[in-house]
Length: 300
Ligand SMILES: [Zn+2]
Image 1 (cartoon, protein in one colour):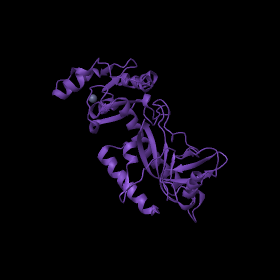
Image 2 (cartoon, helix red, strand yellow):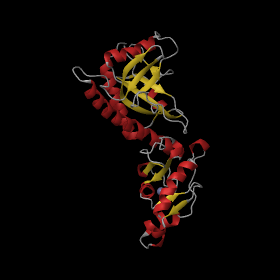
Image 3 (cartoon, protein in one colour):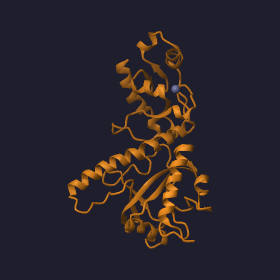
Image 4 (cartoon, protein in one colour):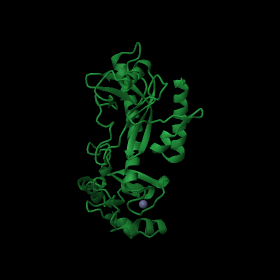
């Protein structure tokens, strides 16, 4: 069946937006395999990384399997310091039909969805992404999360650089935040590590060492799942977590008298041990906790 690729892509991206809003940003492989377009089931992901359904001229998506919690997500080590990611060909033959189809996305500026695995069978979709370069020798293409990474007609190199670095900053934020959140929340089974609150709407993935610091990598051991109030208190240094996973409340706050939030939400948490992820590789890194705790101790 010949399918109008443009229409299909629009329908797929609209559906992904709606599904993300309804079910949370991460979607199960099962949902993605059961996508229907005009009454026909067309899986959005396939067995292989590059998904090109029969009858399509271009692929519709690429897929990356999940990385362990203590490893950087796939996009992080970017070439040329920007937010660009390389994506490996299928196999070692540059002329494999799927590799040729991927290359066609570069020539024809066709947008793709990039599904990044956050745990087994669960994916975070990024879209649209574009193939912006091809490297048959290294058997890979370069993916950019935003359109227009290439130099525009009539644009100077300096102008192109400014525009691209801006686009890349935006793209990195767009990629970084939701993936970090999903990975951290998954490790903590969607509950606050301090008080145990289980409402995802009220939970954040807090960085232990902030991402403005070169040590503040977007990996699970540099994160904790905190409810909004504990995240706010952590960032304001009203609350600290020791390298031994013990919650400390600032002295001055312990002396105050106020309502139930202060008493139950904060003061009673003093001395409590945080709940740790089961997987050791997901637990907070003690050195990172120490760096952060020193900052708290100075202000306390
Ligand atoms: Zn909490």
